[in-house]
Image 1 (tube, rainbow, N blue to C red):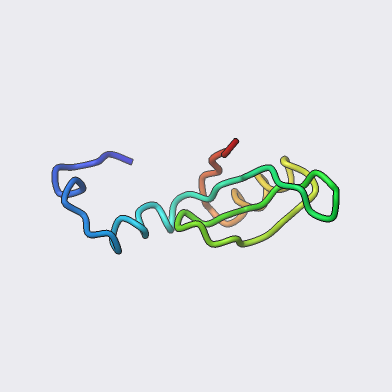
Image 2: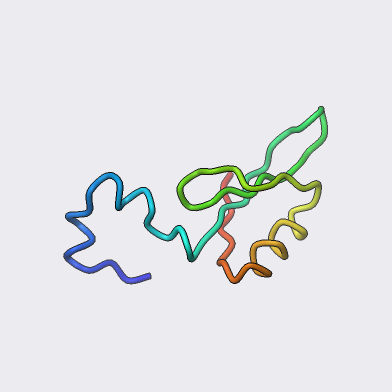
Length: 71
């Protein structure tokens, strides 16, 4: 994604949707005392929780999104 000068003047609402249809985040989490991986949309909406990071990445790619890891 290339940011242009118009990207600098995005409204808060438009900034929140930046990348919404292009990327999803994988974030390690603990669910029911087990290590899991949450998949989040670019706006932070939790989409799914899976037990394996590779499954999370595969799910994201299957929906034509680019996975990004959060630590």
